[in-house]
Length: 270
Image 1: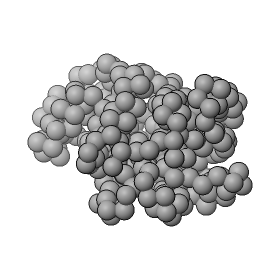
Image 2 (image 1 turned 180 degrees about the vertical axis):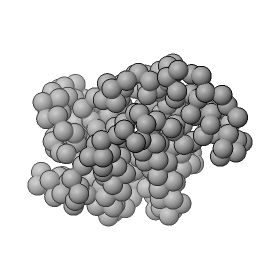
Image 3 (image 1 turned 60 degrees about the horizontal axis):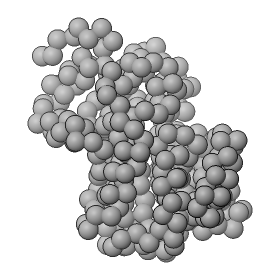
Image 4 (image 1 turned 90 degrees about the horizontal axis):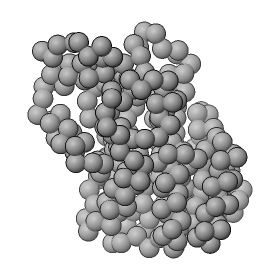
């Protein structure tokens, strides 16, 4: 069933830049109202003003830190205070860390797990009753190509995105007959602020980056599919890499990834 975007109110996390910003623009262009969530209020307000002026849609701005322990209940309360009922959800917010696990700051790792794992779970659970009541919307969780193989030097990020992928595919199966379209969207290296936040270009191992517009186009194409499955991978090269990862042993897969993520690129694959 095709999505009737002008009837949707979409809550979008991580909306202030990158893939989230392009999602917001694409949804507004299709006539959807929006609830924009991110920490940077100034960016959200500027984007909201632009979208209202250009597309005449309703845009609610909710500045929010997704690392708080009670993120689902707190965000639902904040949205309710605006008198808005959410019919669709895109859990896009997330960030990564890079480097040997033993050297990482445990407080930053805890925040990474909170934003990348706990927040999508809690937010989905908090808003699912409204999504199911609407019955014709969507729930998209943004995973990553890092979900498809263990990722040395990004061990927590890869593990978090593997969780998001598995969690979302399970929700797809649970909810597939409810009218709610559910899937995980997995970008590879994308031209966003991701590496700036991580602190190194090594985080994407020199891969050719796709554009946020490519990733969002993949999501909209999946939403328009006749029978959308539980996952959508952006880019043909990424889809081939995911397929190849299923053919490798766990040892071969993680050893290959260890070589790919090595800045010196001198680790043999065995």
